[in-house]
Each structure stands twice: as C-alpha cells, then as structure tokens.
Length: 138
Image (cartoon, rainbow, N blue to C red; front, top):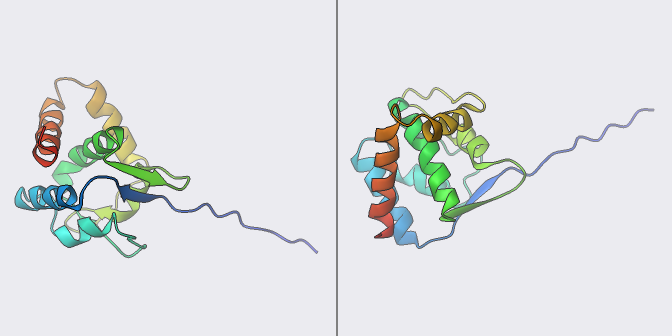
C-alpha cells in the first residue's frame, strides 16, 4: 500500500508593523486616487484576510502595486510570515476592476523592471515615494 503525504506550506500573511492610522491613511490615499475600489478590502489584507478577500486594483497601476509592496516591505512597514513571499500573496488577493486575476510572478517581474528601467518607470517610483512620504510623515 502506498501512502502519500501532501506537504502543504503555510500561506504567506502580511503583518502591518506601523500604526493603524498609517494603514488607514494609505487606504484613503489609494481610494482617493482611484487605484483601489474598496478601502475595507485593502485594510483586511493585513487583518487575517482568508482566501476570500479580493482587492480590486486599477489594472493600469499594477507596476505601482509591485513597487509599493517592495518599498513598504524594505522599510519594514509590513513583514511576512509563511514560506511564500508578498508578491505571491498579492497575486492571490489582487485583481483588476474587471476581476481578472494576476498571473504568477507578474508582480515580481514588474518590480524588477520598475527598479531597473530608469526612464520608463520614473513616474511610478515618484508616485510610490510620494505616497510613502504622505503616510509616514517624512
């Protein structure tokens, strides 16, 4: 008799390390700019989201999502638990306004391009820096 054990890895979770006010400010900025449809859904990502939470994000702004996640993680504004990274987490929980899912590794690839291609993504980097400055007060 063959017994198979399925190795399941714990899903990645995001833990917001800064004040709730900072997370609230971020969700307000994203909503005001028309980047997300629901502040509540975005907020839930950091509060035990489960598999059902889907954040609708402007399809034209996925490069901003990738770079924003990268910067927030680099500055320890949020940390991750589990074995999968925050890009894989985001690809499960973000979709565009038409509810089309993201493809695997698309955010990681986008972030790489934003960080490497100076001219093409300068506006994305500037917008992320502006958002982070607004929520952190520095």
